[in-house]
Length: 413
Image (cartoon, rainbow, N blue to C red; front, side, top):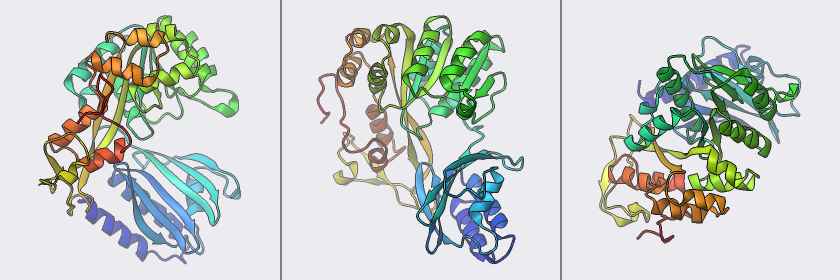
């Protein structure tokens, strides 16, 4: 079923529901979650207003407004979500988080409620089953980068850091790495994870979820995990100096450590770790590679070439396509997403010295570029040249303030 027809049929179904019925909230939520899964949505926003619930759905990283709907006169939509997620329905003055336990729903679903001026806003996060990207070769990484990542996963120690902003696909890449490890080891390596939360179950991996209320946080859990004879450890996300310190110590003492980290670039990740207090010599000896990534929407087949220089938006490209919009792409001009990535490795000449000297991100990036590192901007421009995405989408994801870095530190023409 096309995206637009699914959206329109869902909208009509939601509008047709009787808001005064006792079953309104249950029917509304069931229809909404079912449609969100079919459309590949990652988040559903239900924001209370004086007129009702403003509904928005995030698809391919972009929030799409679906309109205003009644909250329910007898049964309340927000209350129904809280019941499904085992939240306290009588507490409307504090934020709450919970998980929807419904075997009929294919995806892992979590609900977050937050008090606002006109009532509680609910955001539903849908974690895809991730069957589309099971292994590294399915992610769409450049062949050379994919080969290097496979090589790093074969190491017996060191840290592989996957970085990028929220929503850049870091967790998907991390799970693909876990499956790659299981596939190639045939169960011969002890693999364990510490996550917050566990989003996808990976056969052959001992997965654990932190519980801060019980004192089981990332740092404490990681220390205990090291006594479980692990050979490979995935730390869901390094958020504090203590967790980072324990993780890198493990990387130095015989474990292969995979972790995600929030940073704008591969060089920026190194700089942030230094700022968090991780010693330069630990980073120099412990890091195998830093992979930084972004997700951009792919142009639909309705896209058309453009001769106007304005559509290049300052990108150093010779040709571009622009989005048009059709029934297949729900009028957005885009369908699906593609991965852009850069990898900083410690065997690039001069990079280790820059780390030991505590150089800033700009100096570290210049050295890496001089050593042959391909940047996110290089990948982005190539994607625009080949018609995979548009210049407007690249600017939406990478911004307008970022430059096209070169080894000399100047902007590309």
